[in-house]
Image 1 (cartoon, rainbow, N blue to C red):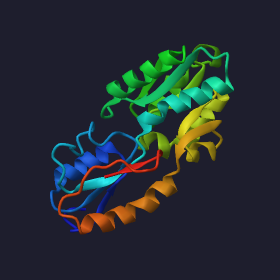
Image 2: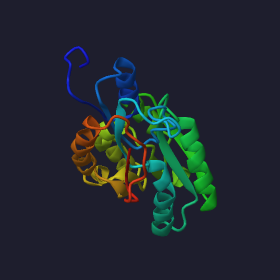
Image 3: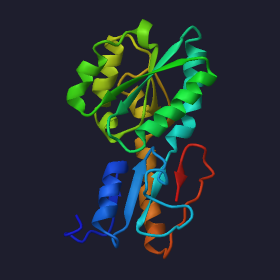
Image 4: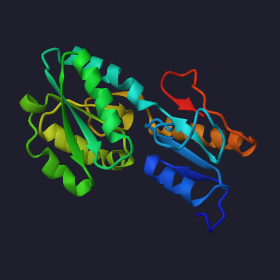
Length: 214
């Protein structure tokens, strides 16, 4: 894309955004994802600027609410399982944040890590409702692209789910707490318009509790 001299690069996820940031320092890169862009190395609060901007739902900040909804819906539940992509940026830190949140609700945390779609069946093979309780996921482009398969496996295992996006519910997931992908991308062109005229984009918290732009 850099060789094509495109006007804007939209990167749906941390890894594509980091690759685009490395590839060009002049073409605007718009990140759309659930991870904290500062923690991921895409932006800096102390030294704003550069060619990366975007929209994030700050998904980790909503984890407590997802766990609260699970506990309210399934009061007898004792365990929550988080689905994570192996090798994704900040996975260890984000799992630690979720573990702290689960303890606050008196829940145990288990982790299912997958590297790719070929790992799904094997990773889920030992999963049971009694052992794993309910499932949440660390938002990742791999999971969103394969949400139908993840929901199918979860339903086969009779595993209650609470995802970060309504897109998962629309293919059969139990519930979600977060934003919708179309809503996120509606904001991206607006961001690119602002970005194209800004000499030094800043990081800021949106007034919406569901998303943030910088």
